[in-house]
Length: 251
Image (tube, rainbow, N blue to C red):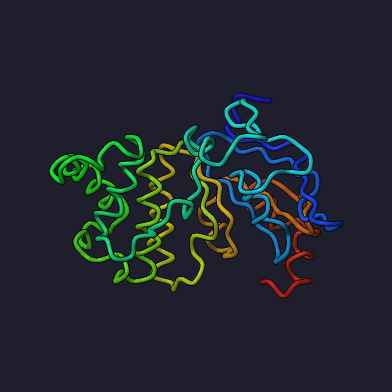
């Protein structure tokens, strides 16, 4: 397994009571790249993500992260190694402020009980870093607002900020543009590009124009199997890929 790849799967397979959702998937994610996992509905993309982030155990195959076999590792252990899925640690505290949500995520990196018996002033040391993260994702102006009051697109930005608080080396984004309008999509695309400057991003995304704009490489799944892998230009010319998308009503 090459050092150029930070995350790899080999023969990754998941069966659910006679139904094979993912079959012999070999995924090679280059260090420092934005890699998209695409495919029509029911292609197995989310199952793949759940296997990589250890929310599901594979029926067969291996997962390697930085050359280390993590196939049987627990989700929290994988996150500690630097492989973090956004929305795994989402803005789950709607009535805390935007700043407090990020601060809670920063506290996790210090150990879960570290601050709970200390005075409020002790967590204020985290404010500077929290504000930096909010600034990086473009929501610093909303720092004092309860998270529940954030517009939808900004809420997703906050979720990315809480994920970045864990300082992931590989960031996994599960349909980051889902439910967004054009303006939010543009803002989130530029955010992902900024975030990817010093880390690797693996994302599942339905919006093909976003994939074309952002991705260095992509893997196309259909019926749980890899149909094609390459640049957007290469993959979009592949007759099998065109057929898989056209045959399911996708543009």
